[in-house]
Each structure stands twice: as C-alpha cells, then as structure tokens.
Length: 132
Image (tube, rainbow, N blue to C red; front, side, top):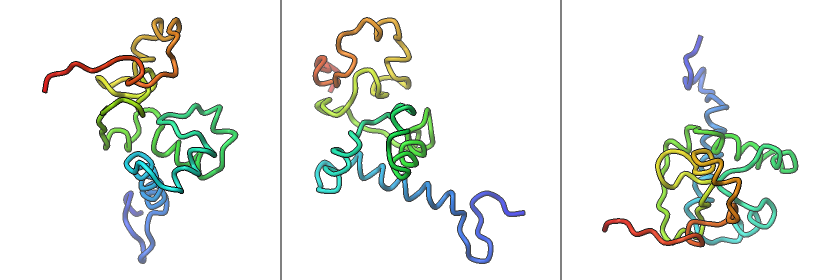
C-alpha cells in the first residue's frame, strides 16, 4: 500500500496534484491585482475571500472545487498563507481573518447581527493606528 503523496509506477497522487493546481489559481486571485482573466472571474462569480456553501450550488464545478479546496474553514491553504490588510479595500471587516486568528463575525456574533455595516471592508469602517 502506498503512503499518501507517493508515486506508483510514475503516477502522481491525482488528488494532491489537483489541490496544488487549484491552490495556484487561488494564489493568483489573491496576489495579482489586475488582469482580464480576473475581471471575467469577478464579473461571473463575484470574487470574495469566503463563499457560502448555499451560493456554491449556483456556481461552476471548477469554482466550487476552488472554493472548497482552498477556503473551507481552517483549511491548509488558509493556514499556509498570510496577507496584509494594507488600505483595507479588499479585506472584509466581518468575514476575513485580519486580526487574531478568527473571523470577527464568529468572535462577536451578537455585534455582527446588529451591525449596519455587515458587508463593509476594513478600509470603509475605520483606520488602523498600529505601531510602526
């Protein structure tokens, strides 16, 4: 029996290979600011950092696989990558892990439910006054 990730007669573990290819697409979506391909995906799927499973029912198989492989819960991709808030224009205040290790919606559910700014980005809500 082969252990996970081993090759057998030159055949790769297709699941791991598929996850790696999907992670490459996710990385490109996160790191590249512009590109025609990204504009098409944004208009078709409304790119966000996290996707509700209910919304995924209406998406293509490729998009569902990309979302599930790289974005579910505390998956390997999320744990292996980090990002900077910067101006905060692409970071969801409530739905992204940008301070601490938990999304603010989960940490402060009661505040989230009464918030009028549930869909705002960090940059729209305030400014960061951190140390230099």
